[in-house]
Length: 228
Ligand code: AP5
Image 1 (cartoon, rainbow, N blue to C red):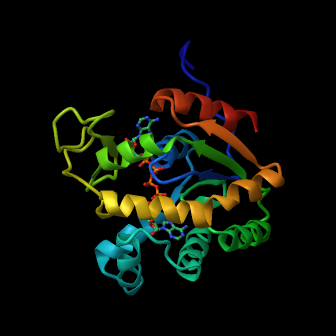
Image 2: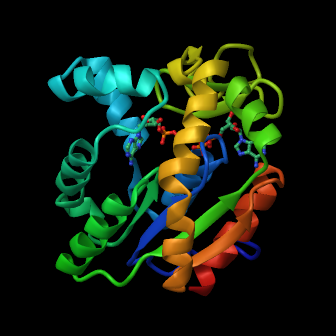
């Protein structure tokens, strides 16, 4: 190895869960961690948006729910996740972004991981204040081709409206409109926030200060993963 090159990390061999409110930076960091460890990034939001854009039956059921900022029913999400985890690329671990989001999903996940003989998950809780969340969501733009995430305020692309990686057109998510953001935050408080205590009680959860810039968050996060 050339001197100064970073050593590759040990295999992940576990489920890592990114828990935190919408706009906290989970997707941005999950892509980096998944690339670093060579494991799949499992975003239930991305899976659902893919179904919506292909107008599958599942997508047609999920679309109006997502557009008003509510959570999609557990049985839809769990079916999608179980199918995804049965694929061979998940055998060395994976990063969940946006799942689980209800107590029922968390309890079912524990059973699924047991069935796969995986150890208990490592849960990273992204802590970001409301004002910052709002700014991040209203400023978010996503590449239509590769899904790369930008922010027009804090992390704009080199050419406005175009992805730095593949030149793809950048779009605003349908649920990043101000009135929907308020609903999504309310759904988080009601249904997902209780998971913080659920995982904390089991000593599986670590808090991460998500208010720092993206590079600082990545640095801290990779240290947390390496230590586990
Ligand atoms: P989903 O796609 O999961 O969205 P979310 O959880 O609401 O999270 P976001 O994608 O909005 O935020 P993020 O934390 O990933 O932030 P990002 O990295 O993009 O869910 C969408 C919908 O699908 C839900 O509302 C629900 O209807 C349904 N759904 C999904 N999963 C479900 C489930 N399990 N059960 C039921 N329903 C489900 O960053 C945001 C912005 O901030 C970007 O512009 C980024 O560039 C910027 N940014 C990131 N990090 C930083 C930083 N450190 N400093 C400054 N800016 C930053």
